[in-house]
Image 1: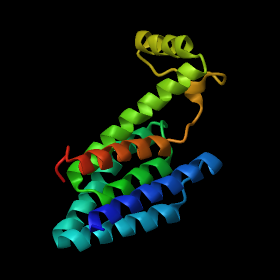
Image 2: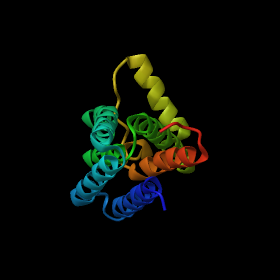
Image 3: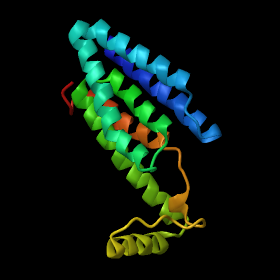
Length: 174
């Protein structure tokens, strides 16, 4: 079994544990993220030496930087940002960027599906229309699903699985 395959299986396993924890307790344990960051960087260093370590650190930075604004504006919890940074530690920086982008897309699709399933598309679009007209943020009402947190770790898992699939299929260089 190749080191890269072991690394990807380990990453997906860690993300699976994070999803279960997020679903059950709405928390992603810091210890899980720290263990994942450590294992990701060790794997990068094992396969690429100092250059691999640099790749892992850059992956962490890219994922953290892309997700931090969502946390800063209240759209995501800190655990989600740390979890995405952990993903970046396992991947070459180009793939880390793609994983973050696919995770953001997956989060948007998950959010849309939740709004559709709850039958609140018209209400949500109406609020966004008011936001555009007022040119100011209007918080969702207490009965609106858009104001409720959802376990973003699911979107991070989906986005990362896309990268793993494309990497295995040879669609992305890495």
